Length: 60
Image (cartoon, rainbow, N blue to C red; front, side, top):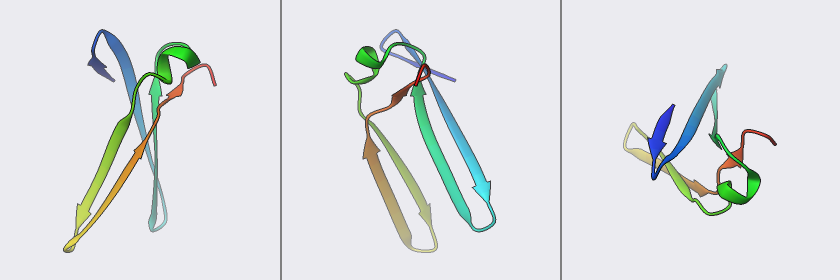
């Protein structure tokens, strides 16, 4: 759980075999979530993967 700008966000990471899955959720409404953008960055072995998206509401 992370707090930012007076809102609470939850980052969920899941590993299945050699794959990772991540989702960022806002503890709030869909309309509130649409006002934010997050960026995830994975680094390793001279590689970098960056993903930018809008969080999902925890109610979705």
